[in-house]
Length: 186
Image 1 (cartoon, rainbow, N blue to C red):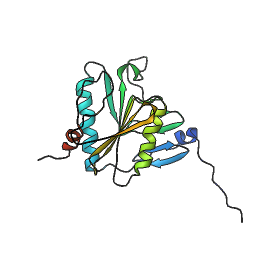
Image 2 (image 1 turned 60 degrees about the vertical axis):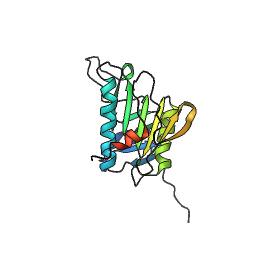
Image 3 (image 1 turned 120 degrees about the horizontal axis):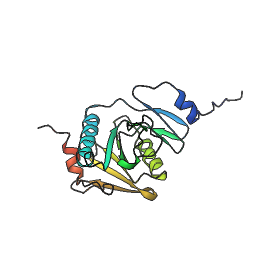
Image 4 (image 1 turned 135 degrees about the horizontal axis):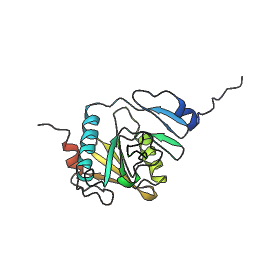
């Protein structure tokens, strides 16, 4: 008996599929549905967007987008937070923001959920790095650590009071401890 191998879907085929809740992503010929965000994930994502936008939005430096489809380099991914420099945000001729972002983020942030494979999430950040993303973060709430991915796919681990790397022109100082302190409301 000959085993049949199903052909991998193409990016074009993936983009024609109906949207899923939570979002599905396409990377390396595979369709992967993201897990439903839980409490820690939701708090970290919201605080990161708010904190970044507080120092970038009014001066039109950059903007943080939660759960935004980014299609580039043969993949379509949905970073937990995608940060774009203002001049790279796609706008329509009317001045309104475009619905489709067919470019890589300048800074891609992923928050590891308990059911996610760290390797699969890291592969998204490495894909971003290969296609021009300046900085990637992988937050691991359980370990209270953050992996940073730099150009050339250099990866560094940050813990505790370590000051985190931020993309140029964003005047923001955050430590790993500060980021994970957002999880405590006491």
